[in-house]
Amino acid sequence: MNCLALLGSPRKDGNTASLLDAFIAGAESKGHSTRMVRLHEKRIEYCNGCGYCRQKGSGQCVHDDDMTGLYRDIVAADAVVQAFPVYWWTMPAQTKVFQDRLYALDYSLLSGKKFYLLSTYMDEDPNSGFALAESSFREICSYLRMDFAGSLGVCSGPRPVKENREALDRAFRMGAGI
Ligand SMILES: Cc1cc2nc3c(=O)[nH]c(=O)nc-3n(C[C@H](O)[C@H](O)[C@H](O)COP(=O)(O)O)c2cc1C
Image (cartoon, rainbow, N blue to C red; front, side, top):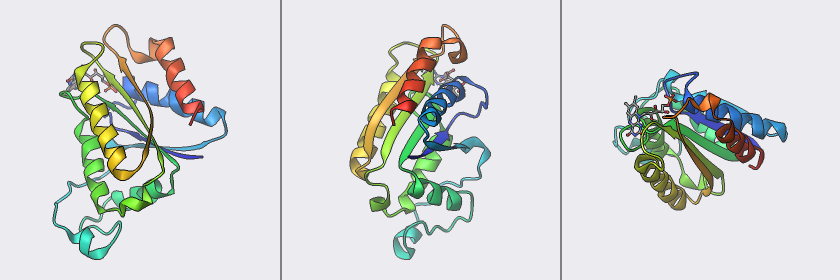
């Protein structure tokens, strides 16, 4: 399988990156190929909601930015993993802007792909922000006919995720199981 892993955290070596690294290690341990993209390092403009894509066709957008390559990457992927820290009870802007820009794609190109969600948060555990973000992605997957195949939310409050062996093992096993 070809797995596209999208990191929504601005912190390259942060909690969410640790969880995603473990997932990727699991996927690669089973011979899957992975591509990790740090959304924070990409130039992704806001969706204008202008409808240009609806007139011009799939992946056509008034913006000429890094989404051009990312449209190709997501269409080519068999599995997509969105990994992000909870910000204000939902996904961070980096993840949301990427998600908004998928509006330009022919949604049939996404149907049938497996979808995984990894997230970290600092406060209460279980975490209502994680539950809200997870619920959004379940609805999105249902609408896009993507297969919501798994999610993992981990609290970084007691200790950094890189020191949380149990969480890293769960992410590894999820990646191995794609
Ligand atoms: C702008 C901002 C908003 C946050 N909002 C929440 C929140 O609503 N709930 C929560 O539990 N943690 C919240 N946090 C804490 C992060 O989710 C948590 O520290 C996470 O593990 C950071 O992941 P990272 O190391 O990958 O950046 C917030 C952090 C920031 C910077």
